[in-house]
Image 1: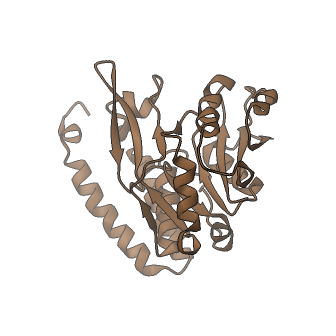
Image 2: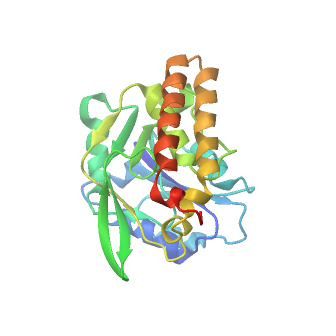
Image 3: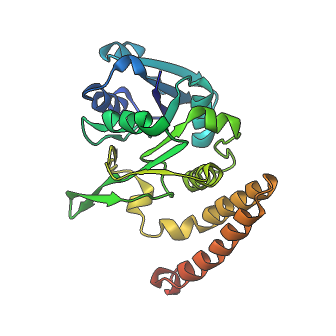
Length: 260
């Protein structure tokens, strides 16, 4: 099997997850025998109806795991995966077009594949209640639009840091891309980061302020990981980058305001 999409599921219902699965079902010009989905329930009492999976032309594996948080559940999905390549998706997102899998498969087949692929992805946003769409180019902050060679991850013991529940994406992406040393980029978007009315990070204007310590924890964990791997130059580079990032972040207007 060439590719599996790995999905952590917590409180997401059949209706939510089926939107993602439906966007995969309509993919064109691909052999679904070369594609599959792995879903891991993160110790939740909201279980998917497994008869739902009969509606799809690709193999879906569903595992019920103890509660470990999003990072631990992504690791569980990775442990259950068997495909040559894996892609982590959030259960409430979807593919942006019917050509998404074709784009990925073309990149896999071209010039012997890749260690890690970073693609432009699309964010669904709202302005005065109306949707609009934003393109994100090669953004290591988000898990969206990234595909990885599974054996590369295994050989280099690259896993999600289970101590991180916020800003865990940047830890995984920066670690993966740094260890890989080379990144394949695609300007063809295949992933849509969907709008959610209950999304804290996009509704709370002070979200970054409230989670700044979590961002420092993520950056610190990265520096420690690089040192553990004897990658001193990467550790120095990232530590220096943290200082610049902190300086400019702390001088943003929202930090300067006394009420914050």
